[in-house]
Length: 506
Image 1 (cartoon, rainbow, N blue to C red):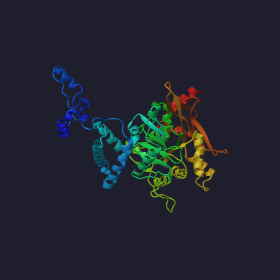
Image 2: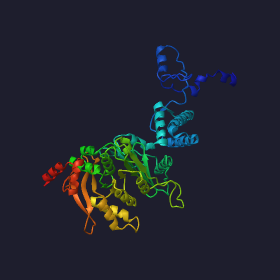
Image 3: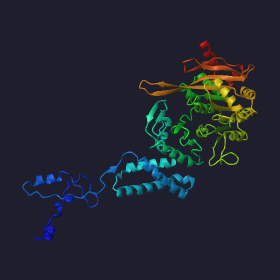
Image 4: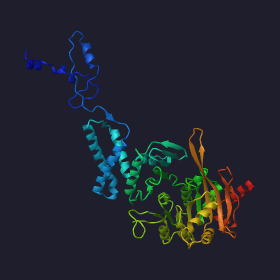
């Protein structure tokens, strides 16, 4: 028999390609039927006397597994650039931007899924594709891998010192380690830069502008710093108690009912006050709670570096004018300013033309205190916050801010204005307490409320302690009430309760 004839009579089923074990059970896909692994054995058992026949394996499709695991964040970053580029090319109306973005994301993911299958990689389950779509949407329009923290009502703050060093502070003060928020420090910086550039009012984050302040959706605020820190630093603060008034803070144990009635009366009488404390003591929450004590008809102006008070959102006030500073973008011009730059001081000057009854400055950090003096001297009430460890320390801090404005602002002038126009300083404290399980929780409280008046001594001012907490205590109790504050009783101050508490203490 010739070699050609022998080759023609070879059964192809005997070739190694077709003698592999039968594939596992599964569904029929196309013209291929997936057989169970025990089907050849069953066929042999059904005909034990029959001559065993070779069972031809049915060819299985090349892709047999489906991806339903963790998100590939490197892929999300790559696709984000594609989505962002197409979105910029379409340039939709701002009101339709997110809807158009969802359409682009769906098309991009469908194309990528098909390409993944063609490459013989894992196919995507529908759930996994939905997760990718949400991750991609968050990367383009929200906060990327940080967005789940903003969506979680239990989270109050996110503290990041490097992409893999993440702590989450829950609403009860508990600090909990969290997963990495990027694949590297460089990727974290890259995303912060992308996010800053895609704000409604774009902001710069670069080696020339090393810090970033952003107001985020969901009433949150972001601060980031890089290049001047050993690792990129990100702090996200969520404003959870937007609707909370003083009575909610009383329920939380931050101050007594008598102290709350006093502060409420101070605000309603349109006196001026300053809320002081270290970082994380709850100054903005206290400022917002005090603002809620103002009658609905009072016209309010809020001036902030980033929106945090959100008094318009509560519906408790008929007129709220909101100003937000803008650091500007691009290179510094001949006038020494970036394009679009708008300072807190300029906002304060504009507010003087808005016929306001009460002016609220989110934080006094520097020369804006001089314009703040003008607001206080205009006759309308005012309140603001500043960083200091004691109530008297807040006075010294404000004096320093004023004198740094220039030689024309002397220490004596600053002290005179502060003593004449600031009525009350509220000091806040915070303490981290370790729990039995090893976690840490924060406790915040009003530790001191003082009155400020002009003084004859070298200090240039005099103070009277109205409420103070004993060392080791978390509750400020009644001390001394200056006579000029007795009139606050007609604004709801519980004078009888104050005297009773003071008498009990005595």
